[in-house]
Length: 385
Ligand SMILES: Cc1ncc(COP(=O)(O)O)c(C=O)c1O
Image (cartoon, rainbow, N blue to C red; front, side):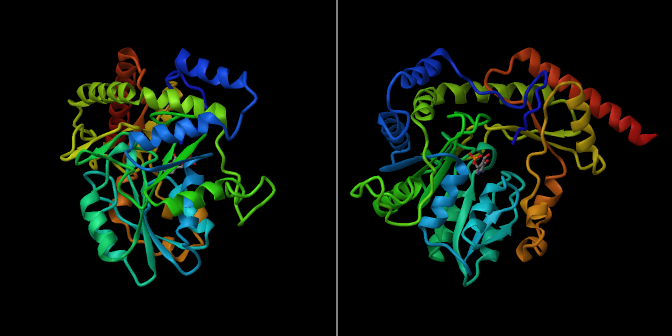
């Protein structure tokens, strides 16, 4: 995730039009800034977009993951299978409930969980799998759902990076028992901060709605708390922003696809760069980030040198992802110390995310690629000396 650094070409940029600004200011002229009509409207727009009966808007993707784990009753002694090659919130949410994340490796083609690695990780303690659609590329849903059903495991689908993507013509986020979304400003659509949960199960939906609001159920009054809850609410301003953004999602995704195609064309001739696939069978991609891989013929460490050069030139790039099991925050965890994830460890040293957003101009895309090409040439020449 991007830090506060301001560079000539940022890594991401939200697409906010007058319609979003008008919608947010209109809310500010009312007396209802939380728990009002915009929340209901945003939830119903999310539910209908995904053809799901229940949507619950929350304050972040992390809050959404936490509520999912909590509502499924996952706790101490339970294991949840997660990728290590993803954003840290995925494993953190498991640890918030004192359950254990068990890390599995990825498929090098899609950078998502490898079903064989998932199957090998299932134990008598496994309760759930968190299937993440990394970078907006749908995971191998058929194989993963079949595995989960065969072993009676819950599926939490993490569509935080993939809103609008489809697997066999079905939207991601409509496969799992519970699915989660995030609307941080680097995402395809944003609410500033924010997230959402979808489920088909009305009991789980009622419970997560209450947990989001300090354990209050609609039948009780404001100071009646049926169970230990959280403040994971999303404001009316955020929901108003989300409604307009969601209504523009199709157009935003088309534009993001063309930026990915532009990069693909500009990078095609560089033999030291592996480009992400523009198309994958049975899936449509919802482009979140543009992550290329450096050739394995370049020495380890090259990516970080390139990153520094690019940043010095005012171009934001990032190391998506630094594996979770290698993070300092995970060093005390047995499952992290003993995880054997050769694909994750090798690929994560070679990935480089380029600036990527729907309004990235042709000139800026060309400038990014020309800086990168010269930086690679400079670094390889230095390495040969
Ligand atoms: C895959 C994934 N899951 C969860 C999250 C957490 O979302 P948030 O930052 O809104 O808490 C993110 C955020 O980047 C993410 O990429």
